[in-house]
Image (cartoon, rainbow, N blue to C red):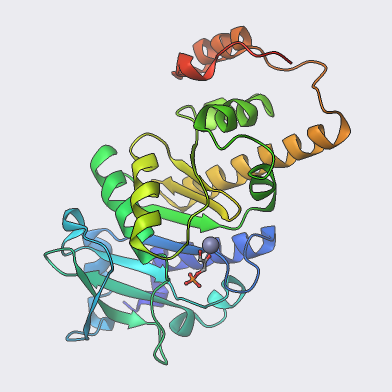
Length: 277
Ligand code: 13P
Ligand code: ZN
């Protein structure tokens, strides 16, 4: 089978288009990666090139040695991904040591994988370990409302988690572990990858101050749905803060405890601290 006939490539391209349509991917903003299953890789083997040049990842990910990923290209636009996949996305294989990668398909015309490859792969390495191999998708989007909040809320996991949870009753059910926040850093390198992957030990969402959001999920639906839920919750908070500096009423810590019982999720008590509203 050809890569472009596969279900995983089609799911990947659909997600690129969905993210573009949400307005999260101006120019080349955002990037996406998918850790392929061995049987998926085997099914497209006839379409994969051998012997490509090995290049440095810029981070060490020994937990991903030998794995292959479908990734968006650096400088490529999400709005073009589905129209011309061979130029805008590609399959890369990681060497056994987890230090270098090789392009096996796509990224035609001298393209490179996303400049956030260190963050994607370090996040994949953590998520593969903590989810017992279930998580396969890492998604970075330039979500405007989440970005706006990073200018006015304290850059603390507890504050972002609690405020986002309060904005829609089902938010804590979608991200019961909460969200992590990384203060402003230069994107595209190992340092921000290390900070982000630390948050991914505990959370499925990491917010980059004044930049955007990273989400992790088992599949495209889960990762996209998580990004969508977090960004929608941030949009409601932006509206609320714009209408009135103080909320008149909200979902209380006791309400969250009732919700946790009803939906059988564990909400860490550290996020249910008393607040002066
Ligand atoms: P790339 O085009 O290299 O993927 O970079 C886009 C981006 O969002 C950087 O954070
Ligand atoms: Zn970005």
